[in-house]
Amino acid sequence: MIDSHCHLDCIDVSAREGGVWSVLDFAQQHGVDRMLCISITLGNDGPRQLAKVHERVWATVGIHPCHAHEEPGVTVEQLLELAKADSVIALGETGLDGFHDPVTDVQRESFVTHLEAGKQARLPIVVHTRDARDETIELIKAHGSTETAGVLHCFTESWDMAQQAIDLGYYISMSGIVSFPKATNVHEVCRKIPGDRLLIETDAPWLAPVPYRGKPNEPAFVSHVAEAVAMLRGTSPEAIAEQTTENFYRLFQAANA
Image 1 (cartoon, rainbow, N blue to C red):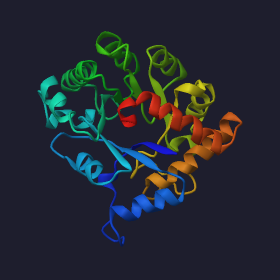
Image 2 (image 1 turned 90 degrees about the horizontal axis):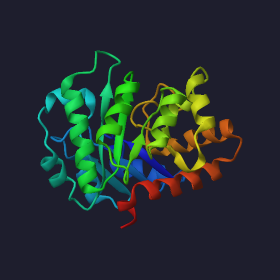
Image 3 (image 1 turned 90 degrees about the vertical axis):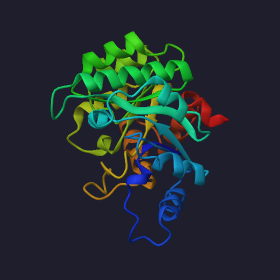
Image 4 (image 1 turned 180 degrees about the vertical axis):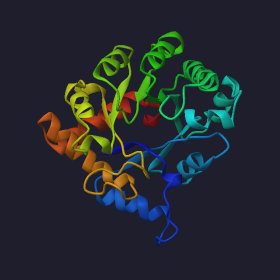
């Protein structure tokens, strides 16, 4: 299976023999063959460097909305230039986050820039959305590609928002939160997502699934996400692994190159 969203460069491997290789090997032991390492700033090229060295890793290029104020004024041209790397298969993560503070104009401008760059590069967009449901959908409608859409990752919002995104060509990704007993809204969405629009992820090193909740997360644990999703959808983890892998390659077509 594939971990469609992790921050491999943020995992603390200082006490692990083998460093990042130990993370990759542990993931493979749990049936996780490949992973997408997500960028949160342009100044850190960790995801691109890891993907360049490790054939099991792909990368994205982008600025997380909570870091948008650190790199204001990003241009389409900047993103397109960085996206030329062979290991880069998507843009993001980008989007809007109104959880801690209201959504800012800098976030909006950065999100629009990523969407416009995605259209030109014909690359999907990895979207972070939190407490900004209507505006996220509005900006995707106004500036997103109708040919190469993207994914709403670590989805915790409403089914109504998920459905609108799916209608726009987007995929919905379940993280370890889907294994939390009290995450009933996420459970509802998980049951309703069409099979061909479902992805799974860890968002490692954060949001470890049960039974590792509260501990550092890593790509190997996406197998537990698959188990939780399978239980909610009344199917097997193997079926979820097969479906989400197929979906990943359909969305991230550059991964097939």
